[in-house]
Image 1 (cartoon, helix red, strand yellow):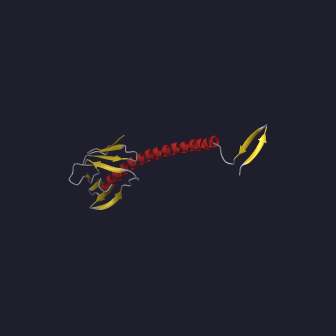
Image 2 (tube, helix red, strand yellow; image 1 turned 30 degrees about the horizontal axis):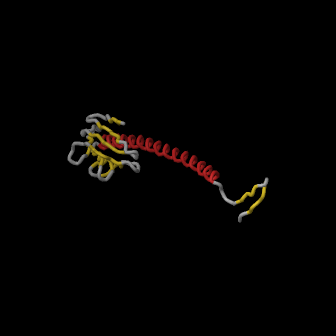
Image 3 (cartoon, helix red, strand yellow; image 1 turned 60 degrees about the vertical axis):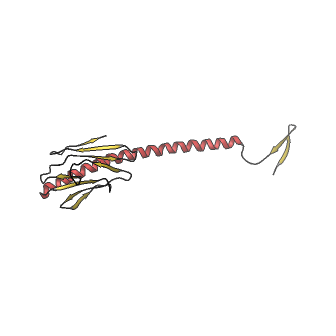
Length: 160
């Protein structure tokens, strides 16, 4: 394995393999590539969370407006349910589920401040909301979002 040669009057010991400098250079290149990749993955996760937060805000607005529309068309009362325990939401009419809230993975409903005994938000047959409510949910980055639903109007405020 070892081969001894004589060059310029010196005896050189030739050993096959990598030197310490070569190993450090290769590890540095791998580390640089890995850090760039992880930075891009974190940026992607943050971007995806932001998009999903806006999507979920719009999903809640859609559920409210679709519930109001259904009550007006059918001339019957309805209820919006946002359940923290099950992390579910939906629109019900006569105890029948009419529309379901699609909650993205990693999002959790923290609190529903509806002041009714069953935390339901009631919609009258003319489409007016008779129960004030704030809905708090947490996204994947643990940021808390608040959506406030006004009484007697179609006003919904999304707070960041």
